[in-house]
Length: 171
Image (cartoon, rainbow, N blue to C red):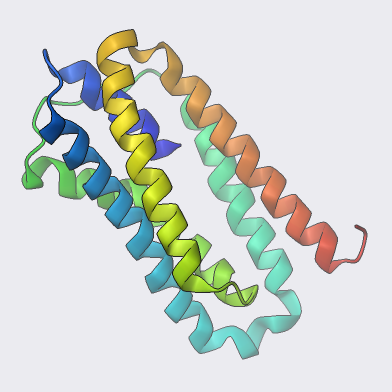
């Protein structure tokens, strides 16, 4: 949802949306959102046995932290971005946006998630949402950015809570 929100802003920044804008946002954000969990997964796999007893608390904490940050960001001002879709403009945005996905990858390692289908789903979904965000931002404006961040934050908190409740055998 963060990538979607940034893509909406990128769509706002251009006069006319072209296919290259849609592809650029999709590839940069989708690629980064797929790569970061993979890196996190390998990091988490390396020390999973050391913290297996508390992995559900870690997963809950990380997802709740990310979700709360998204909710707080949704309450702020709409971010304005420059109109450039160059690598120099997109790379830092993609990395900054996907850094929280590194923590999700660590969580995946703790939960023994099959990483390849997970990162393919994340990457493809982010690609589609990012491309759509550019188009939507260009057509409808920034009024949906905060709502998408709020929804994404609430969803992450809900997922973290479900993980915690399942491991505590409450559900």
